[in-house]
Structure formats: structure tokens, C-alpha cells
Amino acid sequence: MRIYEITNPEDQLALLKMIIDNTWAAISREQQTKKPLVKATPATPLKKGVKPKAIPKPKKAPYAATPKPLAKPNPVYQTPTQIHHQQLKTKQGYAQEVEGTFNKDAVKMPKSLQPLPGNIISPIGGVDPDFEKKMQDARNQGEQNRANGSLPLSN
Image (cartoon, rainbow, N blue to C red):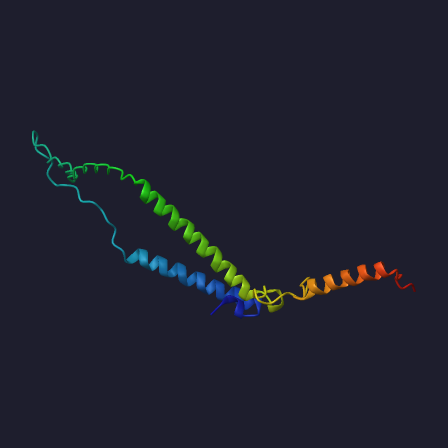
């Protein structure tokens, strides 16, 4: 039971006192039941000239010999053709990566911003295929009007 579960302060103190008293009583009982450890002294003294046995020093564990270092490998030099092929692979890989990035971006772009196929002329700044012919006809008509002496229309 917790002390704080009891709302009355006097009851809390009584419970705390009971816990402390029981704890100290248990400690004192435990000390009384233990037997005191007294080292017995030898009844007969050691004889003169007799030395106590020497305790041998512990032996060190054997160590494994250090391994020999590995020989350094000889460098392998590339031939000029190998270098050229490696550079080509790198360039091709980069080109494929860039192309893949552009293809991914084209899919993400809204359809209105995607480039038109080559056979369709853009309506923005695009030119009618007969535009040049019509322009030439208009120029010729203007020259004929000037030659005939007609004046442009005025508002």
C-alpha cells in the first residue's frame, strides 16, 4: 500500500512508523542469527627453519606470432584502348541518364507545355504553309496599285 493513498496525515505517519519499526526489527534479528566469523589461530607455532610454501606466480598465456605482412600487389596499367572504351561507357551512361531524366520530366509536364511533334506547326508564332504565297500576292497587288496611280484608302 502506498503512503499517499491514505488521505489523513496522522494515518500516513502511523503507517510510516510501522514500516520503519518492522524494517529495523528485521535487521536486528538477522544480525543476531548470524554467527561471528573469528579466524582461528594455530595452536602450535611454526618451527624454526621451516618456511611457508611460496605461491608460484601465474604463467603468462602464450601469444601467437604476428603474421607476416602481405605483399603489395603489382598495379595493373590500362592500355589506351581500354581507357578509351571506359570513357565511352561513362559518356554513354551519362547520356542515357540525362535522357531518362528528360523523359521523366516530359511525363510530369502538363500537356499544354509539352513540345509538339515535328509535323505540327505551333499556333503561337506558327506560320501558315501558304503564308509566303499570300504575302507575295499582296506585295504584287500593292505594286500594281502604285503603278496605276491609285491612292491608299484613308479613313
